[in-house]
Image (tube, rainbow, N blue to C red):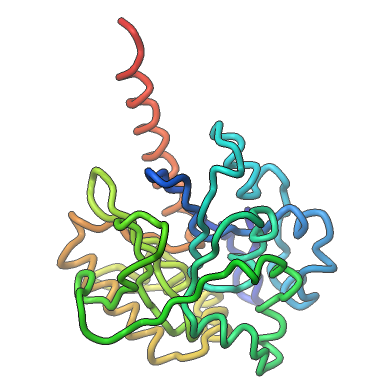
Amino acid sequence: MFARARTPSLRGRLVCHCLLVETANGLVLCDTGFGVRDVERPELRLSRFFLTLLRPEFRLDMTAIRQVEGLGFAPRDVRHVLLTHLDFDHAGGLDDFPWATVHLLRSERQAAFAQSTRLDRMRYRPQQWSTSGSWRVHDVRSGGERWFGFQRVRALPGVAQDVLLVPLPGHTFGHAGIAVRGDDGWFLLAGDAYFFAGELDLARPNCPLGLRAYQWLMQKDGPARLANQQRLRELRRDHGEEVTIVSSHDLVEFERCARTAGERAAASDASRSPT
């Protein structure tokens, strides 16, 4: 799903990057983007402010459930949904997978349900939460095993051991990254911990003015957000060969990942073809 970020000085093109993981226990969907109901009746589901600011490009074929079907899977193969956070552009598709168990940090659910500020009431949309009865919330406990120096949720019941929630608060109080270990190392979907690939540049971190302003508008804890961006830069510096880091909204990162995934799928199909 695409959106155009609009400010007086910048109009950019963003994506809502979701991740589908095959495990022995079924499919795990990481974030959902906008859902079918968002596409059909956005005025009932989303705030007028964000509809005007972002001008989302609603396309039914780009919803997670249609993408899952396009890959040849049955939607019910999605057994678990992991959320980086509950913003409207990450949780809109929850209604499309009512049978799935949803995993998120307890602090995120608490903040979303509290609806304590006007911004919270615009960003967190209960209209998208018909599945809240199946949500499983997780606490971050001090001590124990860590992931490349980051805290981690140690156990997600029913989910593969190599799929982790990694707390990255700042954008929201309960914001998390999702780390997945594959054949080529770890992949970290960093959610909205940053928006622009240049923010992780090791020499000269940079971000367009409009996106900087949007991140400032949306942040719940600015110092924590900036501290976690620095930690992600250090992760890339020290473990860049082991961990691929992508945000939820950078178009270039998304296209690079999609191209790599397509190349791997083609190679896998070729290896199974008779000669």
